[in-house]
Length: 227
Ligand code: CA
Image (spheres, helix red, strand yellow):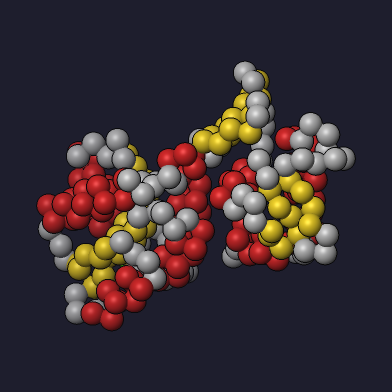
């Protein structure tokens, strides 16, 4: 069944929504603020995000912008307050797939959710969840990797980097770009961090880490993944 992430700070609203979606057979994740919401969205890749606009720490707009920049295919329905016409416009400009005005009926929300899921089903690249690199198989949805039949351990950040490389296969990526896109809002020391992570990734996936064939160095700029 589809997995829904509800990002909403009002406990009663969360409870009500959660119950209804569970009843309809959806898998439900919840987050009570924008930061937690972004983290869960990127970790679990839910099939759809229900996103409230008025949130503590990070507004729904910021969350929408950030999620769409990292994963443009992730469907988002914004929850707006009545009369906030500007919210709808801004939300849609930021890439939200639909919006619904509070207060809404559960029936209407479920219908909107189903419509967005139908509309986006064909566009979502489910292949993104799995990636095969010679004898490696990466499962980005469940954060698992196998080499042949052997399970290989990668850190969360290593998975994020790998997924990012797969999404940008063949592109020259600067260290700053990688820092921005993979580390984002997290406190980041220096571009040296990127280099260190690349080093570790190479040790795990390259047949000869000293002569990389998948993650190439582009001198003076950054890296390029060819897999
Ligand atoms: Ca709210």
